[in-house]
Image 1: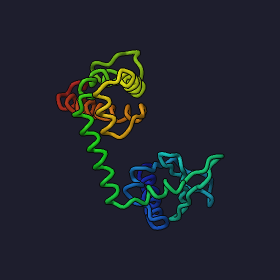
Image 2: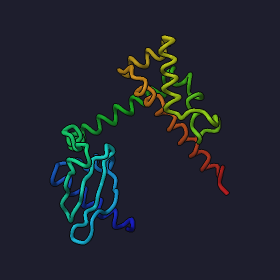
Image 3: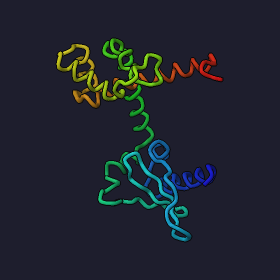
Image 4: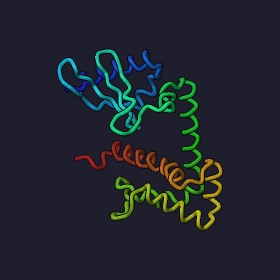
Length: 195
């Protein structure tokens, strides 16, 4: 199927979700992906999936939420509510994430361990081949700092309102992606790495 046809199915699904379920188009664009067709002839539907693996089936201009797929229930009330978020709620959520990112990037914890964290990304010039993946490395760092009662971690965790190593690792890695993207942009402008 060509991209124009996929885009048309996505637009039809977006309009149907907004009409039938009051889902916010911004949430749909950010949280739903096209999977492909299912069935044949008059029974053909086009399947879409959320990041939580909940499925939608588009037939014509009508969408069905697959409440159950396999053994697992899908489309919880919380997930439906998330897709119904108002623009102001989405904007507030994005602003909070941006504030977390800015705080993390400026924090002593990130600044003191930036190179160590970045060294686990293959796109970074100081990449350590054979090392653990970035998430595992960040989680291990958080756990080691917690065991050592590190004041930088304590301050960071208090500000973020979490002591969960997985969550803190995810937050701590967010600026790494920006640093890598900036490096790629600089390399692209300078023509580095191009034939």
